[in-house]
Image (tube, rainbow, N blue to C red):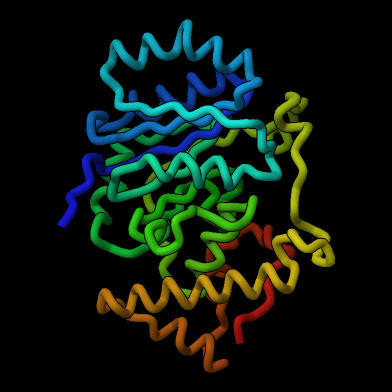
Length: 274
């Protein structure tokens, strides 16, 4: 049986945000109880002169000085429309119990956050941190790498947080943990967006589009993935009664999502799996 080298792998795609990336990384490692058990994966665009120069001249020497375990990958630019593919590729280089999808505009604010995660090791849950407006999705998803092993990717869709969250809610395996992350996204803080933010293309809001998160075929593929995860859980001897009752039409699939949606932020939910 393979024992992972690390407990947690943090995945951060980044573009032209040197100071934001610096804050994100060191907020994580400064507040970690066991930084040597954390694997850092960074993804840069090959044409990102700002980010790569800052990394090589400033950030890399600091990471080396602190003996932080890191891997850097460079990509032909895929943009926000393909952000899941950055996470997918970064995850292939991980060797950990958990995957943690982080951002270059995020800041960890909880001391010993890594211990909070690792106390759930061995459980098959999607962990949800506290962040802006207590969104019901796991905005910075933390999930077992064994889930990734089922598919060989983190997410089929650009909206990795939404995809993982919806699959997990249908299985009743979303667990809120005592970790807080500040998200400095401009539209959440009434600030002017930078180029990286302003150039985003969002695949949500037009179900007729074949790649939209709520397109019928996209939803159906997500439900197939749900069945794959459920079968894996059953092989592990884990309870899937909630999910099986959803399929039988006996259970509201979004029951726990609605409970966690304390500010009624959800305006669209994928089609029921019944």
